[in-house]
Image 1 (cartoon, protein in one colour):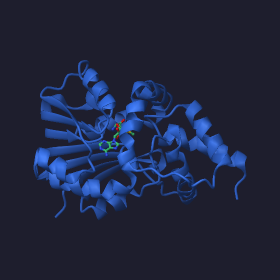
Image 2: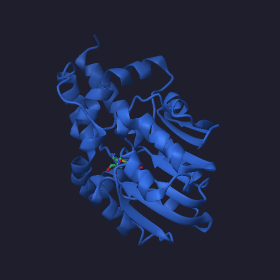
Image 3: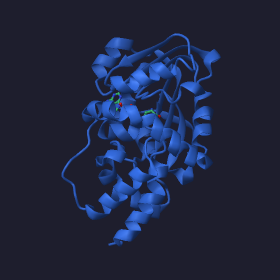
Length: 265
Ligand SMILES: C[S@@+](CC[C@H](N)C(=O)[O-])C[C@H]1O[C@@H](n2cnc3c(N)ncnc32)[C@H](O)[C@@H]1O
């Protein structure tokens, strides 16, 4: 077994990078120390349905952490990555798990006919609505909904309703619901539409990947981890849902991956 100090070091090294939007160094330290002392703890579990109260609670500090972490990790190019990815969006756009609207500044507004921002947390979405005053997209609506409730979501929008569907850094929060959610996305997208994903992913490097496997569940359960299980094999999940990967860009050695996907056959 690796010594405690090594776990602390690795967590400090990797965790802030794995949680670019939501984690401060202080939170990373707190998690790494807690993790090191409770590495065998498997008492609680995360689930998509538990996320609403949690994210309602995180909402007021979410952007403060994001600003600090994003600026300290600017060398990773994640902001540019968002911008590059979202430059592919057009027409009627659905962003799932939209949070506080971090992506709003990056949309190519002239190419959009409409934008629907969906999130389970009213508090997160309220901040997105406020943010839209600074980066106004026209024809925007903010829908509080559970993306894992396929029947309700299809009932609300209909099959093949969107040209573009976006998700950034939320598949890890959906955890065991990821494939089902991507299958739903496949039903919501038009046949020639584009699905744009920017996600935490399990790195290909076997040492880093093994570390992620060892720590992911414990980190997700701690407050600073915000429910994100950061070792998902995203390529496999996307393919399992029937989507086709058209383009992929890796950041930080593949800890973060941006995908342009098609609906598949
Ligand atoms: C890690 S945040 C990502 C927010 C944003 N996409 C970003 O890039 O910063 C995850 C978001 O997913 C939302 N969420 C979690 N479970 C959900 C669900 N079942 N349906 C819809 N939104 C959900 C949370 O409320 C939160 O805003």
